[in-house]
Length: 253
Image (tube, rainbow, N blue to C red):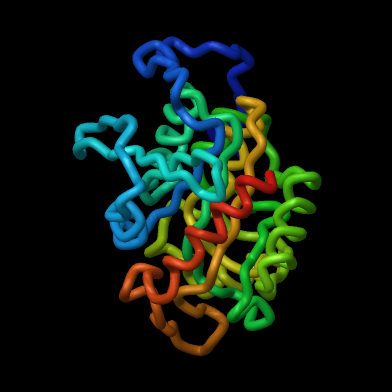
């Protein structure tokens, strides 16, 4: 890859760091969950037992961070922004606030029908985005922690969810998923495509934070024509049950 990504910055500290303006909060839960569906977040945020404990601030506006007591365990949850850079900025800041374990989940495009109607547990992600190269040495893929995968698998089995483990393709350009590139990624063994997993794996490995992600299918690309399916609802149909599953997973992590 003859690009600027070939030169990985070795410094642990940057010129601007998340802890420079995001101060650690001793009351912030060690366990944190995030997803990309505003509808799912808002539904849980409306529960009587949920409270706002902090905010993430950007030029796009503020994002509330909520706390819920789930099975006698305090858990923070918040809305992640779509796309690797914005998603990773949020993860950086919740770690600076005090998160010690993170579970992320969201919808994806299906590349292989064997993954349809199953929870997908990424074992690795093809790094077809830019953010991860600022956190890890260059490579085609970033691999998920095997211990985290084992714990998530155990949690899914306990909760009765069917699942499949495999590779995901993280891309920056949703409107440049061409037929030739889709064919190439399928040849590489990718089950699905999304926009954040490689970067989320990279930042949490860089920061030494236990992390896991799971995905569920929205649109289908394993066909002669694109099938939007649930993508038109932004992955919301039946997805609220996955937030409760994410709470189970982060406790298991």
